[in-house]
Length: 108
Image (cartoon, rainbow, N blue to C red; front, side, top):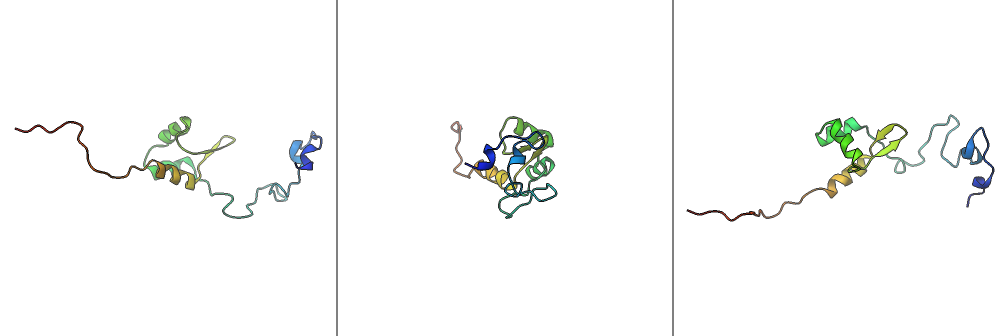
């Protein structure tokens, strides 16, 4: 276990103050930095997802409310990982197959 987590929590910085900011991936200005491009995906906005799917933003919000689409909630922001959305779409793809009739065709 990390020894920094066992330190008492200070009033000024909480648990983050006890940890090394460099180990959390923060720069001196407090902005997160990606060490490798494959670790942090480029997240997209809900309007981009709606345009890509050809539906309204309201429909995408409904999918999120029903937890039917992968999303990332960051505070009040709602963002989407394009790779996760692409995988979600691929899971729902229906492969073409032989056509079946539910009722027999009438003759005569």
